[in-house]
Image (cartoon, rainbow, N blue to C red; front, side):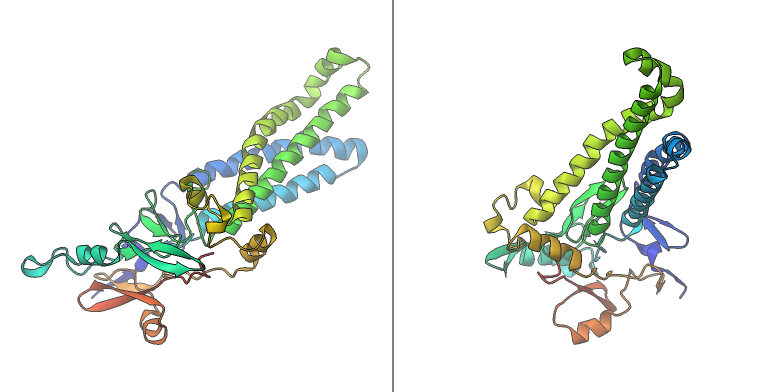
Length: 338
């Protein structure tokens, strides 16, 4: 029987490039638009304000700070766009309908496990069965309608990065927001300084001085307007997600009002500082699959260590994918889901 890479069997709507080495969201090309929204203004900034400060004052500070923040912003953009956020592959039942009129496997699982409550800290957390993916969702897991699969610790599907923001790439998303905020603030400050400095050096005063400076500061004026508009959105988003980190919530949970009171939030630690420390020191969760693994053309994505994990770990959720084989999917423990 012929073999092929497991990414060709991927049950979601994601796009794959370079023989499965790169996976992006269904709207991954939007990340390219975001790239140019950051990259093009950076080129314009270097061509006028940065050059001005080097020529007039022999000061490369504007150039170096802007280059550093822009590079880090684009680096985090690439990471959050290309990294698997925590997808859980769909688990197809072995039969679409039960034999001899019996209930379908999907219906039996749904009736048995939807909903199911488990103790977490001092609260009960509800586990739900996803009828689309045929899995029992771990805590904080949700189905992304854009990607077509369930995602661990789902925050939101971001159109600016063209990917889900969730358990495995949320730190990169925070880095992207932080660095992009610094790019906007840096651009806003240096361009305003450039325009003011050129105007002051002019022999005229007031509006006349500003008008005379226009031929020499056109790019800075355009960047000033652009960054002034962008800074409200980007810095606002950065502040909002900082608040979510302080309160131990995700965007999805906040919009649903799941944990408006920190007392009832099992993921809130003793303080904002403890939430930050846990967020940044918590190790990156492993992927549930290998997109480059060779599989038979009749199989679904199969974790290479599934059988070993099923035998050695009691914390596995084992679900059938065909009559002849069993695929094991590890469900995160409560501490992993924070």
